[in-house]
Length: 79
Image (cartoon, rainbow, N blue to C red; front, side, top):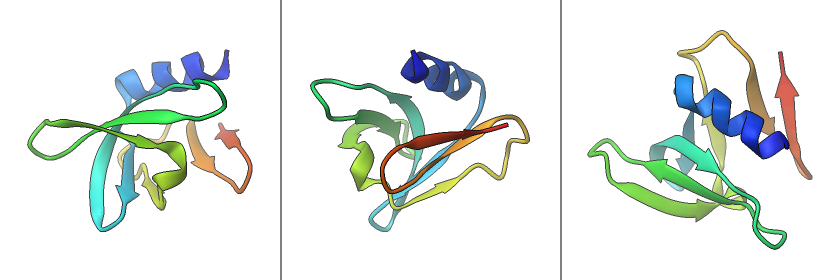
């Protein structure tokens, strides 16, 4: 499943997401009943849950391996 592959990437790579004015570390993604809840952590290590649609921007400048980005309708892998 694609979600499992993305979560595997997140285990060993730091991908930051901006939700509103705040940047979070993307910890995991799930797919439940047609929605995509995400688990993120802040600078203090606290976990928060949002929906994938809440993400406004990705930043993965720390990694050079495969990344993914949000398009209007789906997630696209880039190798």
